[in-house]
Every structure is written in C-alpha cells, then in structure tokens.
Length: 176
Image 1 (spheres, one colour):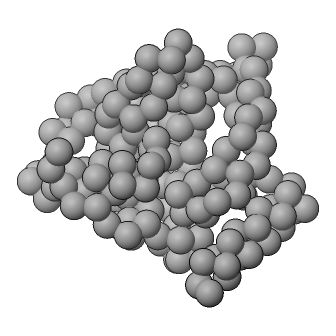
Image 2 (cartoon, rainbow, N blue to C red; image 1 turned 60 degrees about the vertical axis):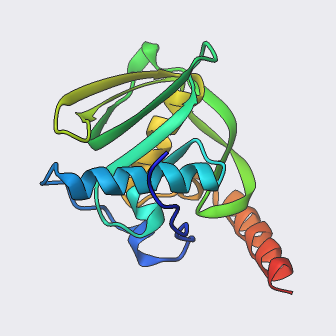
C-alpha cells in the first residue's frame, strides 16, 4: 500500500465544521491525497474517511466497509452527490455510529438503510455507488463530513452533550 498516514483532525477544528471545496483537478496530487487518505483510514482502524478529517478542504472521501450482504466494498468518491430514498421507500436504520474525529464514544443515529452516491473516481471518471448496510451509513456519514457536519450534529442536544462529555473525559485521561 502506498500513501502516508496523516493525523486525524479532531472535532472543533474549523475544517470539519464548514462545507468543503469541490475538486477541480484530477491529477497526481489528488491521487497522492487519496493514497494518504486510505493509509490514514487504515492506520486509525476506520471504514471511511473524508479529506477534511486529515485537514484537507476538498470534497473527496474513501471507504472500505461491508455492504448489507457483508461483502466488503472499497473505493473513492470525488465531489459526491448523495441520493436517499423518499416516502414509503425510506426505512430508517437506527444503529450505533462513531467517528475517527471524535475518537471513543458512539451513539445511535437513525439513517436511511439505502443510499446512492454519484461522483467521480480519482481519474475523473463518473461513478455511482449503491449502498446497503454499513456501506449505506458510511456513504451518508462521509458526505455529511464534506458538508461540514458530524454525526453528533444529528443527535438530540442531550445525546450530543453525552458524547462530547465522554470524548473529553477520554481525552483528559489519555493526556495524564
């Protein structure tokens, strides 16, 4: 595997809390970024990683996680557009979710059990990924990141406070 693992950006860092810029150049620099993103994701034991999670303000994410049939899917989506089921086709899957940018705590987040993401690969070729299971959750979670949103932004105020309290307690414990 090529690429260099970079430090994961932690909640509170400005790049995580505002929408990312679209990718305009599909070049060697983008390919190197994607290699670094995969290396960073694997080093942190993640299943998905958005560019802003390593401090880069660009609309690109990588993933390597199982779909609803437990078949691992791996890829990159540049400038993603997320499409979710509407009306009667929309089924929420309340499941545990965590984030490399908020290491430690997890919380239940209800997300649609199906997701489709349109975008481009690292060369600029169009791609469409249909996700079920963890992959559906991952596509939504990573697209949220690129829109400047974290999973805790989808929680009730009380649940968000609990996650942040646990995060701060773990962080304080690690510092001692």
